[in-house]
Image (cartoon, rainbow over all chains, first blue to last red; front, side, top):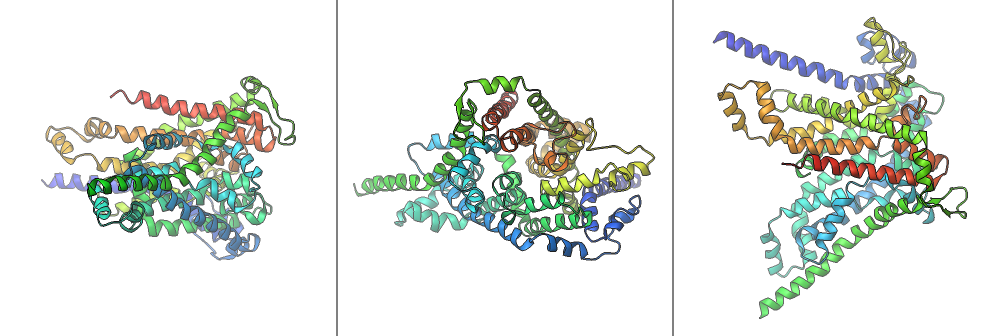
Length: 281
Length: 298
């Protein structure tokens, strides 16, 4: 009995050790990045062989001051947040009403639209970048907010997420509202929307993350320096002299902060969104 | 009578509402997804230089002929496949292993989950910049090489050697992406009925046998989905080589999307770049369909 207990304890101990070692390996690059962001340039590359390379020795905020001196961060954040906010407002409204109509209304062309959306989900953006860019330049949208926002409002994946969610809402609820004299559109905004906060939160966080991280499209259509989004600013800071690794690390941390804050507040929906995509797909 | 009148009124109202609700999103999808897709194919049969927009000439399949004779295209195709074929299984196994480690509830499980997921909290640009510094070939400035030297090994020119550059990107990409797929697997693992494991352990099956006979078969759908999304993601590789190696050394990390970018946006060969994009599209769709066929037997 005793030895069984001991071996169970040993198993548990090894399990924790394994998790801890792998966990440390996973976070160590990020820990190094954060600690380097507080160190003077010379200290980052001193004692790289010792564990102190992961600790912020001689910590100061100098690197952060350098980043804010060299990059107009207020402008960069404004560019990024304004474009994402605009996309998300339209994204959440237009894709959800589309998903709702496909899930709950009976109309000609419903099946066709649904298969159209599912088929377009596999279409890689990268295959249409060139004509989309030409379209933008013919419309005179290059280097304007419109080019960042309008082409990316409608998303097959968001429509599909909404469709799946609304599909599971009981029809009784909608019929009861109709009998009470509510119009189909009114029912959606007054009855369905308020009980669907989870799916809105999930689509919100998934799309926020996708756009915050997006590099390629802003890189192609936003060439003006004052138009840069956060990823463009980070990338160009990395390739602009003087290359101060300390300041680069600080810039990386600054660019990751909003994501980390988002994650802390919306972790539940983010993780649910990732997980549910797997179950439905 | 009154009820049926109401019913048909309602049906009509519903139909109008349906078009009001679907039209904006569908119109946007057509304008900014369908139309560009059609134009990719359309431009691919034209000679279309950005510098000479008035001189667009129909040349039939010339772009495709040129493409299949272009060693740079084949190189990009090969690199893209190399990346995909290696990163997909590597990341899949890593993600599944991590999910197994944190699938059960124990003290601190949330901490470990967050640790494995943490690389996802930064963007690919951030990760790529960070690892370019970590991979630095000088052991005095590159963390990984300084560790290798500390262990008595030779330093490796990770990003400047044609043999190692793509592997270095693969390793980094799997590290960054595994946490995402881990979350998908965790959901899949939670869907497996407990009693299957209990029955197996009564029969005396050990953990490995349980993993093979219960966990894997139950995760089939999840594994298929993870392979699909990782594969499509991998085929689009661009940010990592753009930030870390600019496609080098000697085109060793030039991918298809990188090639589309180089031809279309840097050299201004729009028509030619569109033919690359069309081939790229066909390959991605074909791979998804083949994967679906292969795994659909049951």
